[in-house]
Image (tube, rainbow, N blue to C red; front, side):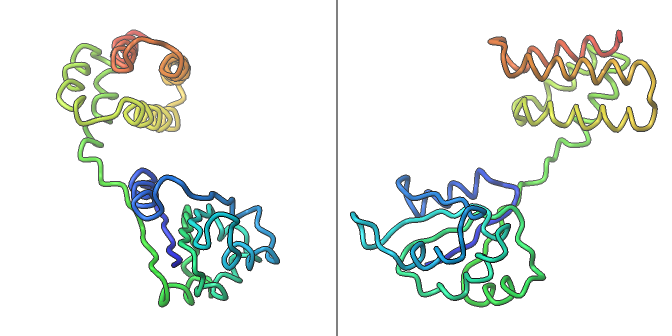
Length: 201
């Protein structure tokens, strides 16, 4: 069995990998595979088990080895190949798609995306109001994801207007990044503190 998983929802992909392979499997970096080692990976047996469970990461980044993959579709082992984004135009992909399962794992759309951007805009003038807006979506968001969206909005602002306020916002976000990774304080508390400071920059 060979399956190819790809997409930006790595959490869901890894859950599916665990469902199929369990928790005890070999991990091989696709970029490190020499083409002449493909037979030993896909057809070779281990000392302890005739049927191996293997996860290969980013095999398509290794063109020479990836092009040989169709030769090993009869593998007796359970093999999952985890890709970032395979090239659907390649001859190898076109050969594989009709013979094995290729599954994409997509992140669900963030229904609060526009509201996150609105929170940032409001915080530039009224930090307390921005925090009240944040309260409405806090339970549906993950703080580090929310922080990432704040950063992207700050960079957009800086690209449009490279003023002192926009520069200071980026510096403060850089400091917030360090605090989020090192402080024992709750992440949301640190983010709220930044939103309050933003209006006074």
